[in-house]
Image (tube, rainbow, N blue to C red; front, side, top):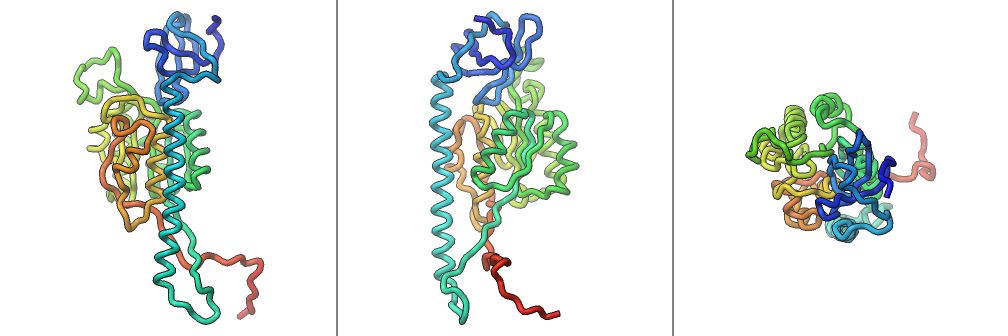
Length: 304
């Protein structure tokens, strides 16, 4: 089957066809391929590739899609329960006043996300999911090596509560150092460490700025040591393209009065605890009173 077209969906015979890729570039007889569901960038000889039907995902992709749906349902369920808790607490504390509604109506201020992604296609998917989850977010396509400098420019103007730095990474096949504790064994972990360092120079408080960092097979321990709250990948496994988004969304809608339940968020990511890990972190979500009124219907007597 002809595999010379850019955009073809393929799997690698040598890896058992477990991950579906899109051909991004062809150089002589080697293709640069990018994972559809997993944050994996690789190269492979054309002879190792088999074209696949987009409507027939691999077993691994099918399981990931099922877990992605469960993760989304979990976040929605959390939101409903949170709204019910907020209203119950306010009803208990509210003191009725003359000419004021008996049930208080509040407004929400979820944490704002600044998302830097080394993959433009994954960035677009991430921004679509933020919007679906009602998480305020700004996203930028930035090469991993340029993320530290980008954060130095963006953080003072965007002023986020949560920073996500992700893209592509991986343990190098022909690495100069076989020690997995060495940053030189990874494609982009060093760049993520530098980006985290730049963010921590801007804000050192782990509860004021939550950092989610890493990609497939990233140096988990180094990212945490650099100052990340959540990072990949404890088991040096592939992580799903949207795992950083789920963690950021959970941080965005967890109350500033509460810490993010680590077991909840990690158990409900697509990659699980082999793919992501983290430390106790306070949420970024706030409520406010009273809910702003519709000014087009408000009758006001001018005072000036």
